[in-house]
Amino acid sequence: LLTWHGIKLNQPDWSDQSHSIAITIESLSGKIAIHYMINAYTDLLEFELPVIHNGKECIWKRWIDTSLQSPYDICQLDKLVEVNQSVFKVNAHSLAVLISEL
Image 1 (cartoon, helix red, strand yellow):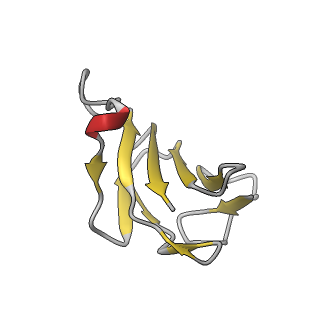
Image 2 (image 1 turned 90 degrees about the vertical axis):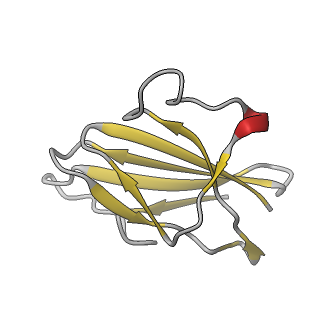
């Protein structure tokens, strides 16, 4: 299952002026959701996070944030950092990826 978003859930901006996109992808088993957020804009953007995906509660954990210094930009899967908010701030020219076990 694949769902497109913009900075607002279920509202992707397909215009020529768009500088951001987000996508939630559910694994074939339905046990994991991965949420990608891409900010190509010159300023920080706040992306809304899905609370429920396909009827299941999402508890998001940060896997990748390219705005962070190495080695904190990519976490090992057993050391993911939980995100306790309804939005995720993605810095300018950065990509962030969150994972939720459904």
